[in-house]
Image (cartoon, rainbow, N blue to C red; front, top):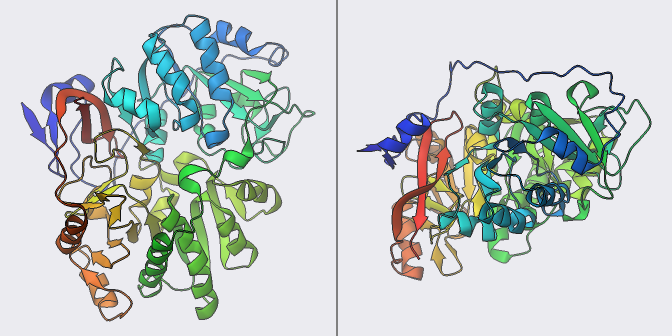
Length: 514
């Protein structure tokens, strides 16, 4: 039997029952009631926290079948994950679940090896790319991956859907008791917003650092009351590689044109007024918007109350100029932003729950006026795919995409065609963010406004710099350039579940036929 959810995606009834999923029905979560779970605490005076090697800690704490977590604040500069996983493989562990906040390219090879050797049999994460995404898409993992947004992961940890046995958290500094932050040290990465969830809820917390400092270490993002062990290694990460990949700044003319058009949409919308709030996602065009927005704010003497999310140096510049009042920082996207948090009291570190958990008493995303996000594909119903390529291979991450799309004005910035592949399609390969949360799609040839937003159509239809099309018209223009794509062939094997942020099932990803 096949079920269909609100975005018309087919869900195998057998699997939804086996894993306890309800189909996605509504992007609104107002009034949702959940029960939070706490961790067991092993009381200690802390005398032995800092006396073990990493291998000794692993042997003391890890057993076959456990769930291990990591964070990705170092992004492509992360050293801790590979060191820990090499020991897991060499020590012969089996049937482990990986539950990192995300999996970056630098982690791919060792996770593939761990899958091949039966060390890892389950994964839950925000996303994956490269070789690992290909391996999972080809069905090599024993169980379906569970893909969650950053806010969805926070909710799952708090409610016990993710039960972390041991969290291995790389930190740029720590004292012998485990008071740590991300702001100081040769490996400073800035905010530790995702790691803070693991530190609070994991049964055992292991801090891995390359910089031991005198006790007590202040300020303490992660506190000694949460930490079981502190291990010193040579280096935990390279902060110069934080700003790689999807967080680069662009010089591409097409992306800059899209960014300028996004700025036109923002500045001509009813939300561009003194005290507005905003977030920019990853992707060249989305990140470039902050440059154009700065000049518009100066020209019109408008200031923002806060900017949210992954913080860039461009946002830090707005803060320093007084154009933004506060930066609410869950993660830093470059070294400059990471260093700034140590210097500016108006750059506030927040955890992933405060940022975007739909099951708490008010997340920061609930206060967003404007968000700019990227996409791999958008369909004529405004559904967005940021997870799989047009070939069906997993090559992306949900990140905060679903979370921030609940803003008053949600803008998707994407080219009409990427390479020789259409970005605007009749039906996305994988639905990640539902179309009813998307307000405007911006391409280099023009924009499309969700028919649900008649108010925006009225506000923007008279702007000469904003050619307005329907999504069907944009899709036809894309097809003119690329032709009709060859359909992807899938088997019936489900290789990944895509959750909506409230824990319902918005789509499944099936094994790609070779």
